Image 1 (tube, each protein chain N blue to C red):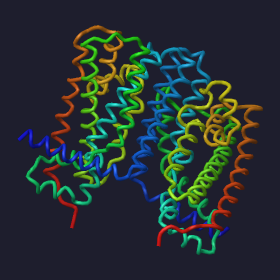
Image 2: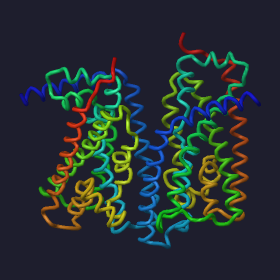
Image 3: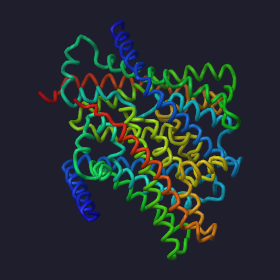
Image 4: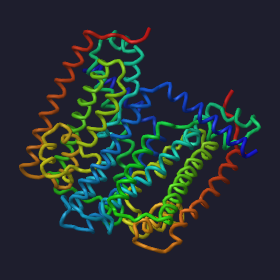
Length: 263
Length: 267
């Protein structure tokens, strides 16, 4: 059964990618647009760090590394959880009725309904920033550090996906998109380019215990950069996965509450 | 003039209907302002003497930028106009006994004013009530406040004159996606939306301050907090008015020559 679900999902992705590739010009332009946005972010960082050698102990290389990781988490989530992101439309057009009628997992179908391949641009830029940051910050690689990075990327992607899922669940009640939820996704992508500690202790606490961004960003970053050496920091990102439990419950409540809006 | 005023009023009334979107917008703007100030504060604490503005002027800059984002957002266009251009609906617009440039100018002005009207007051109100160092401070002087209001008006008019040139360029190309993607991004960076112009390297800043983009948000927002004062301020106001004139003339010429040889898309 598991294997079957995976095959179905792969098929969904392949359909989505092939249909996106029918519009090559638009694909290329979207990626160029993302590149321009990244270039202006990087330029602004270069300009600011010309004046200040570091911010609360982090150099520009540390920040670029951090920015690259957050970009990758965000892009991966937008890529594969786009179905949740666009869920308002699915509810409004009563496409969710069709999903309910099929004898397959609903979440799998929603995830499969969209796959935003154009986010690959952001993903690649994230990788480039990561590599640059790694080389410049002079980090010595070892197995634990690679593991930390993998945990950060995985848990961060899941955290963003969970936020997309909350947004989608709320659509069951409101029937319309909730733009303010962008604060939690785009907001963290934008402001999470700096390690979260620079915003102060109280903010860091909120980002540790309420929405656990810091577990996938700040604490493991300290370990990556060699600022702290406690081994458990490498596994801390996995704790952020607990955030998916309330997301999942909210989704279940939403599905139960669903009343078709179509005719 | 009267007919353009009614286009303006209609579009204004339409824009004021979007209250839910405005609520979402102002929540986002408030959060954005808060986070930006948080980051700048960290830099300030790392080395106060390297900060190119007073911190208070910086805080004012950010709050006003967020409150009046609808005025100076280089990404905000009237999507109806773009679809008119691409699907051929523009032929109906041309058939009307009105000047296309003035009509679109009036509509865009109304769109931005209605969006700002629903957002700026709550953002500013919250910003005044915040604890230090996040609180929006008083203007540098009553004269600065007055000049802030004047230059913000000129800045808005300049912004729309710039947008009009973009519409004109889009009418000339069959697929305007490229223009819509690149020019706003460049204008955004050069106008001080991402980081204020004082944070640019000295030589670059001197050049940028001469460009039209500096006249959009950079001038009014820096005048409020007193970062722009004296001769430099008068110089930038003169430049702002100069560029407004240039853009208005350029846009009109562009529209006239484009309309004369317009090719209507679609059937």
